[in-house]
Length: 81
Image (cartoon, rainbow, N blue to C red; front, side):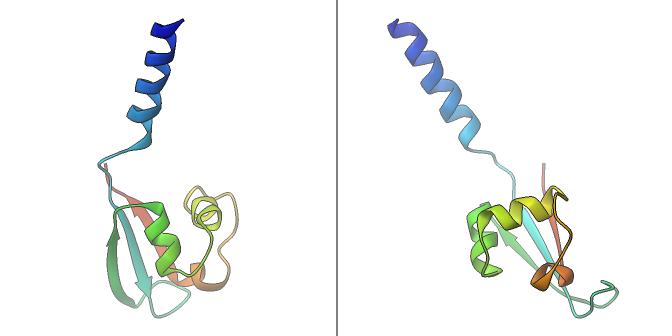
């Protein structure tokens, strides 16, 4: 029983962190033709903070679950490998 618990804890810690960066590209217009700035974030929580939104909204936008609305119409979000 104890060994199963240790494996679960190891897997949970292994999946929690990645070495990826979140790149947020900001544009002046909705057509994303006029580039303004690029910002690097370490976590999805940081992206949510700079966009003044919820983490779930950022994740849904990144995974294209929801259509861009509000501030997201001026953003592109990428994750480095």
